[in-house]
Length: 391
Ligand SMILES: Cc1ncc(COP(=O)(O)O)c(C=O)c1O
Image 1 (spheres, rainbow, N blue to C red):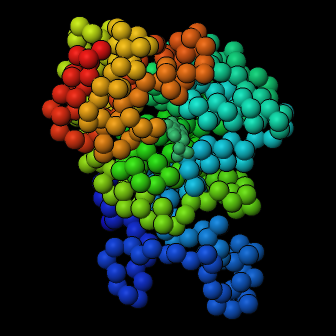
Image 2 (cartoon, rainbow, N blue to C red; image 1 turned 180 degrees about the vertical axis):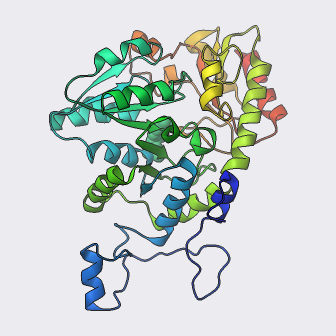
């Protein structure tokens, strides 16, 4: 069944080899190291003449199962599981860049990715330029002779703008650049960047892959030659995923398809019900007809995702009042959970930016971001509507 082309079957049936205990569900391999059967086997494993586990910092059956599954779901040749999404973002760049290189990144990338590009990489003489998601015509001019990689997220956070992956894949191919896509918002169920020309796909598995707010984890998947470099870098710097978390995440992938179907159905209905509310200036959701890139979203995404944003006319103070008035929705620094989560980026995650910097990445003063969960839609909607009343 590993050979099945169907997402659901692959997600459920790709599993580590059954042991002599004949277990049905994959066991947890909590072991730091693995025993060599002979001195010659030890030599062969270290010399890469034989494939196999040596030490859990390098590989472990739980991590291998999780990665094999994720690769099958993303259409990737190989991958490496990391201790967090940020470890994945960092090693996917650091393993392949050297002093003097330049990265072209979309301006709307996750905050810690900005910190890697703005603060950490300059220490190693790796520079970057930011390109605006809504101005694709300007991207090519930002490519320099030393540009090595393009790094993007689509849909963007929190603006939910869509980057045309087919166009970007062609641009990367034309300039022989590595295209690296953070696919955490869409998950492999909704979007496969490799299909459009990406060379690397990075994930915060903490979000929808876990989907229940339990563990931190990440992954880098992509072409064999690039992952070889990533694996070498990871093996010697140590950002590998804990086998326990890999076990949790591999089990979670089994239900990703059904969870994403429900997340997206709830999100679309919520977006439709909120659109036109007198206290809301606009609602943004990739699969709403009113989304400026609705056609593009439909082309490259199976469904619209679980994130919905809306702008309260009451602005900055309105956003804060809204959060204080919620009764069921969680106010927490995560997304991609069974529980619906609301955040107000202007007063929290992006409060340190200047207003014009916030506006450049689509963060208007009253913007509310909702990570729509799996509760009954009536209850999600009722809580949001009563909180809007208080505003
Ligand atoms: C788009 C995106 N990329 C990367 C990350 C970082 O992932 P982690 O928190 O698992 O390190 C996050 C969230 O935290 C995210 O939302």
